[in-house]
Length: 54
Image (cartoon, rainbow, N blue to C red; front, side):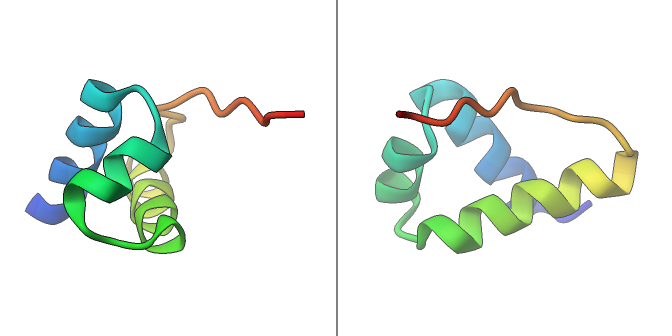
């Protein structure tokens, strides 16, 4: 686990969405999503419930 990944995860939890978190962190959505997926993969657990809009 990298500290950056933990920061990303915490920001997504605090803001309640990937969109708001990416704006706060100043990163792109794909970068944010990828780092959360890597973190989930390292611990083999789903940390967030992803709900698609539509």
